[in-house]
Length: 99
Image (tube, rainbow, N blue to C red):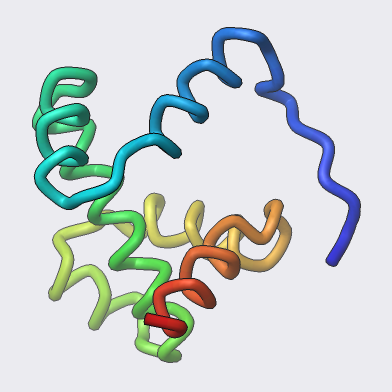
């Protein structure tokens, strides 16, 4: 894995991520994220994760756009993260496979 250097690193971000790591159930996640984010923000994050999953399944941009409602700009941005990002999607998908 390539060396990770965060552009976001700060005390506040550490506090946020440590808080997220304390969540133990889906219900706790729903409660916390509904308080923290708007519905649109949560839906956008869920959509990006679905787009990443479909890209890894080698679906076409057209199929992804039709299934998720994501714009081609969003699909392209997610694809760029998959190819040139920090491997965050890979880490999550690997962990989801383990369950």
